[in-house]
Image 1: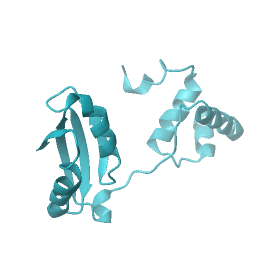
Image 2: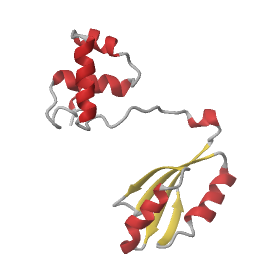
Image 3: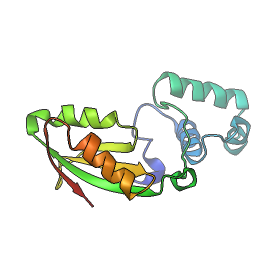
Image 4: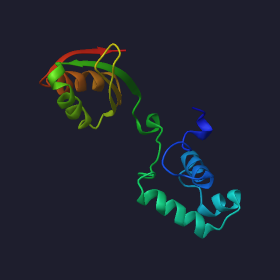
Length: 145
């Protein structure tokens, strides 16, 4: 599906809703006044549409994207994890509770679970893996990429 139109086939959004979403995805802090100007509608109309998109769960939250290296998180690791099949979701859930793990995704590829981990350095990464991940019940194997 074309990137520009990926929202048009979901929910019951019209073209203006789709454009509002696209603009907020680019910059969640974009003033509603600027969105209104680009769409040639009133700021009040944009505000009502955004409120409806929030209420309907189309927009879940507004957030920020951080340059982790600027706050000292200099090591990024993609880690594959295998678990006992009956324990897969339990292991994934426990991994979600670890603040250093930025993303937990189940996979149908080489590993059952893929992790994105941010730490300050390699030593911190090694400690995290050996102290918090390896001891998890149901964990079979860890592979760093």
